[in-house]
Image 1 (tube, one colour):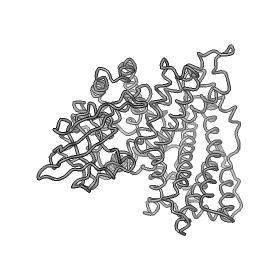
Image 2 (cartoon, helix red, strand yellow; image 1 turned 120 degrees about the vertical axis):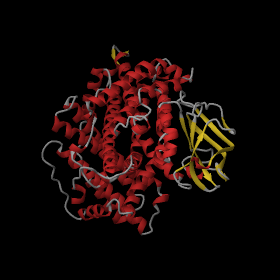
Image 3 (cartoon, rainbow, N blue to C red; image 1 turned 90 degrees about the horizontal axis):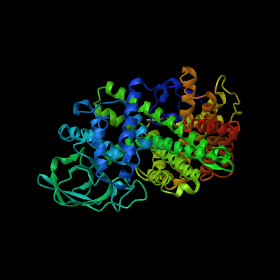
Image 4 (cartoon, rainbow, N blue to C red; image 1 turned 135 degrees about the vertical axis):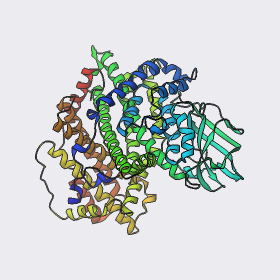
Amino acid sequence: MSSVLAEQKVLKGGEFLIANTPPSATFSPEDFSEEQLMVKQMVADFIQQDIVPNLNKIEKQEDGIAVKLLDKMAELGLLGSHMPEVYGGLEMDTNTNTLICDVMGGSSGSFTVSFAAHTGIGMLPILYYGTDQQKEEWLPRLITGELKAAYCLTEPGSGSDATGAKTTAMRDGDEWVLNGQKMWISNAGFADVFIVFAQADGDKFTGFIVPRNLEGLTLGAEEEKLGIKGSSTRQVFFENVRIPFDSYLGEIGKGHLIAFNVLNVGRFKLHALSVGGSRRALTIGINYANERIQFGQAIANFGAIKYKIAESAIQIFTGECSLYRVSQQIQDMNKALMAEGKSFAEAKRLSAEEYAIECALLTFIGSELLDYTVDEVLQIHGGMGYSEETMAPRMYRDARINRIYEGTNEINRLLSVDMLLRRAMKGALDIVGPAWSVQKELAQPADTTVPEGLYGPEIKAVTEFKKAILMVVGAAAKAQMDGKINLKSEQEIIMNVADMLADLLNAESTLLRLQKLRETGKATQPQEVLDAVLKVYLHDANARIAKNGLDAVAGFAEGDLLDTFVAGIRRFTQYPPQNVKALRRIVADHCIAANEYAL
């Protein structure tokens, strides 16, 4: 299994499955520089001074508050932190931009949607695919906030199948004539420019830059939504809207590249916002648990409540570990590409595209940890959790959309595995060799050796998790080659594998962070608490990986072959059982004593 154990400093996208990386190569919040911490404080101050006092206004979309807040962010340079200096941006690195999203997710309510839509899907298509003239025309004004952006992709008949859009852009001399309808368009109520996807000449899926004030462009009423009520969401209608011929982005007929590559960043940012939102939600839950007295004591003293606090904290911490690990990988790739001569925009696009697998995994990891946390925080509030006097209902409603947009979690699960297999088929990722090594290993006696030193059982567990996943993926691919299954129609199996990959990414990222903290002495929290987080996560991940693996192989194998796979899964999921009750109480007690999420 040498191919799995080979250690590399910078991994390619998806390569975390087949190679190890040294702890020194990972990045975590303990590594932020003084300058980055100043940026963090600036964002936190903006939230406290400008957003928190206006949360009710934001919720009701009163007084043009979203536009005013975006203008304030522009004054601070936060609308262009990820943009080139030549257009007025601050050109901050990936980790700093990740930190900005992380902090914005904390107490910004549904304003985060307005911010993310403008700076992400609104601006990136122009940065990535615009001509020099288009960038010079639009980016400076989007960075200063003079213009606000929106992204028009979804239609009544095309959601996940975005390229099935019916909106058309027909060539008429030196112009395009747009006709069609878009729905669920964030920022539509105040946007000055729209990135619109339409079928050029009726059948070529293409992106266009469309200014707001054009004859024939009209808006529907504000949608009455379950959550994120503070974000403007409207339908956009195009009736014989005329735009110049040179308004298209990239290549005619290649709009899918724009949509997919912009979504990679959107998915990553969604995870960052979810981690930040989860921290804030859990702190609110802990505050209430410490204040609420029942049976003569604070409910925070009860084991059932401690479980909720600890499990939420563990999921947040592990999600944070994966967030900043992938952020560092994107940053390293971006630097390498620019050193090769790629432009700022090319390097940004290609580095995010390289880690599309990880971005898809992070989407459902983050959105589901946020969903779990807000649900448990509402439960901690009991009956008060149903009262609008508390933040619990609003957080609960706002969180739910995250499992739907930027590609549903089902789509992202399918995409993560599909992209992994495609990379393997193209030779960009060698899965066949490691998978074959695992198959051969099954014929040998099990290696019970545990690595020496700190975290020996945990290092072994993560290595074995990789083997379990490789065995399942290799077996499923072989079954497809033999004509026994068609993975395209076996979505349940694909989703089993996606969940195994997500557990692996979180488990290894957490292990690497704790190893590095041991080596550097930078830990800001008690080692006992951090170790408890790791052990509980691995204990639970071990069981989940075993179940998902068994569910997957039972879906395509039978008889002796199934028995072999079952034995293999059990062999590779042998992390020693942990006293998770005691370990969770260590985590919970630490946070309860601090009266906040404190990892």
